[in-house]
Structure formats: structure tokens, C-alpha cells
Image (cartoon, rainbow, N blue to C red; front, side, top):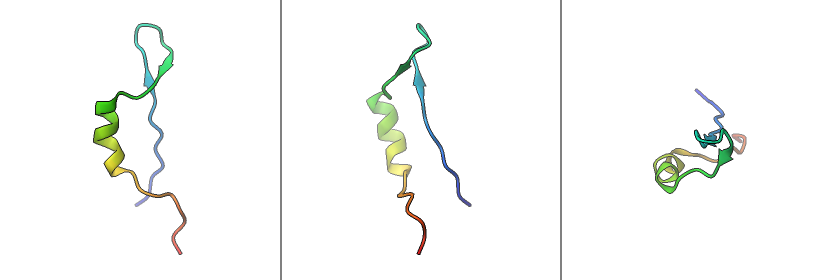
Length: 39
């Protein structure tokens, strides 16, 4: 099974995009894998 996911963080107060918080990155970055095609 494969999936491509893009995460976005939106400030609820303004509705504008913002950087992902460090705690969020620490939880999700270890699950990311290289998107290179399989040989």
C-alpha cells in the first residue's frame, strides 16, 4: 500500500499558514520515507 501525504498547519486565529510546531515534526518525521521509485 502506498500513499502520498502533505501536511499543513493553519493558525486558527488568522486562517493563515504557519510552520509546523516542533512537537508535531518530532512525531511525524520519523514515519516519513524516501519517495524514490522502487528499483
